[in-house]
Image (cartoon, rainbow, N blue to C red; front, side, top):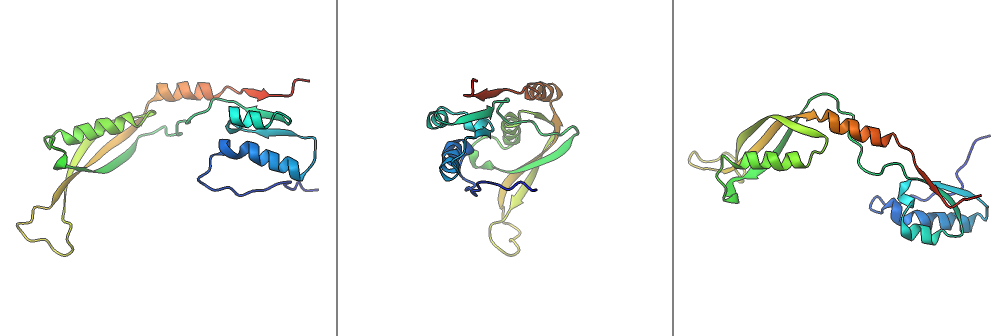
Length: 169
């Protein structure tokens, strides 16, 4: 015999699981009057959801919530673009500032072998005139190297498994 789902709802890609979990479980309970233990991931464990589910039995996975680092173990190349010279900063400092800003957005990787490649772009279609200057951009290229110690620490925390429930008997 095959298992069949008791309830299915295709959600919008724009709605948060945590915002709709309790409502979905209540809808299921209304359609199927069964005494059930509802299992859900950490998105269920919010104050608003728990208030809605006081009459239901539930178990929620509370394993460390957050972004898990990618499984990148080798170097990979990264290129990002569009730093214009209209910022008022000296042109030779802009690529360094952009690379520093990009580095801050990468919690599990560091940038090495950074290069700034100057790109001139002409907005009009067709071949530009010889004296046309165009707009100057820079493309930052670098090698992404995993931060081994940071990734190891996050993986260690991810090895924990915590459960919360309102079933006490």
